[in-house]
Length: 233
Image (tube, rainbow, N blue to C red; front, side, top):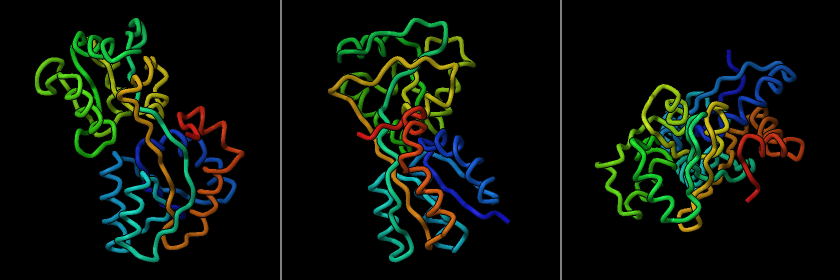
């Protein structure tokens, strides 16, 4: 039997994977973890709670946690913030990083690449922001460059290693940090800068979830959060 069920946005995967094994061993728990794009995570948590399937801890954006709390009054309690992670561009190792410091430089970099790899254009934070970004830059997402969507940003970053195309991945920093083979190009210029906050919610007052949330958000894991791509602001 699993003792701690976690349903989390993919942006928090690196942090959870970096801390869950130690916590579970110390508490002698057996965890179960699900990760997906944040919209998919919301749908999955709602489905689990609707049928009273085990779901002890959720990691979502504040607006989606508030929606979930509104749908299930009295069953979810806020359990702190993991911090903010910026949307960034990444490229493969061995490829010289492009200049994206200004809007014109960003437009040029994207227009000169063969493809943009990103998350689900409807369900993921970075996928929706990619659509907004390309439209704002005057670039047709259905034309050049090709936009290839994956379930989440982490999968988009990982897929760069398997293609010979000139590719840029648009993903959150926490997703890029999952793949040491990817090279961080940088965050988007100020006009398109997006840093997304992820927060925790404890379901049905699970004691194990409260303890793990306290670990994830506590001072002792501040450096771990930073290394995984979360910042306080």
